[in-house]
Amino acid sequence: MLAEKLLACLACPACGGGPLRLDTERSAEETIVEGSLGCPECKRWYRVVDDIPRLMPPGLASNLRAGDEHWSEWREAMLDFLQWREDAWSDEQAAAERRSAALALHEQFLEFCALPDGPFDCLDIGAGAGQLSDLIGGDCTYVGIDPLPGGRAPGGDLPPHMPRASRPVSLVQAVGEVLPFARSSFDVVLMLGSLDHTCRPDEAIAEAARVLRDGGTLCILQGKSSRRSCGIGGALRSVVSGIGGGRKVSARDTHLHRFGLKELEALVSERFVVAACSEEADRIFLRAISQSPEA
Ligand SMILES: C[S@@+](CC[C@H](N)C(=O)[O-])C[C@H]1O[C@@H](n2cnc3c(N)ncnc32)[C@H](O)[C@@H]1O
Ligand SMILES: [Zn+2]
Image (cartoon, rainbow, N blue to C red):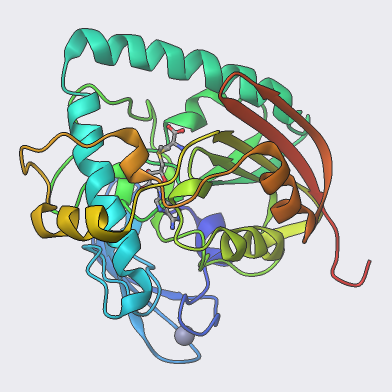
């Protein structure tokens, strides 16, 4: 749902300019089926397709093709992630169990987040289809970003048994390292299982700090994941990588980074004051408060 409020805070991923100007080509009810967003500063144009602005950074195409080396290992990991996801959600019974486990975990995490009581603006980084919005009550204006638009694979769709949002949500195709929003646009930033998938977690944390209002909250749910293996194994995988290649991919192969509680706290503390964290079994919950750079 390309709402007025979202349009007002979108910024150019190349130069940071904004607000972006919307040219609607086709609309239906409240959605922009097709259109373009123009940057007033650098004059670049970005597509809006199926109501989702495509605001990927320079060097990274909407279909995840990388224009330079910077994103190439990340892209490979994303292809592995898509393969893993397809396998993990293909069996109906296993998918039902996965869905209810995820729901319980997300409810527990949102409790930990201590979200504001009054109206607040919330950004979900690595939102997939934006299904978390169903669980956030109160007066929340929810925006989700993901390099997979609406959670969909390039040229594909969501696996059939994967959860979807039950009502229209505002989604943007973008990466956490280059958030296409003006500074101080949100009260809450959430990252559920996405930090270890980013190419540069430090840049994603710095961007979260930039788009949060002073005193805003960053909440991270992170599995104590292992890191993807690189080197020869990685090189071999890249030769055969591709969606539906018939090869079994482990969840481990889809993470570019690995965090324990200490590493996560150290990373976040560079820009935030950590307010609470908890570690249980293979999960970390962390809540931190943004502070202005001068503070
Ligand atoms: C394990 S899934 C978690 C999805 C959802 N947050 C949840 O908890 O169900 C990780 C998500 O991170 C996204 N992701 C990968 N790289 C990213 C990046 N650089 N910036 C933001 N999200 C990214 C993936 O596309 C994927 O949707
Ligand atoms: Zn621009």
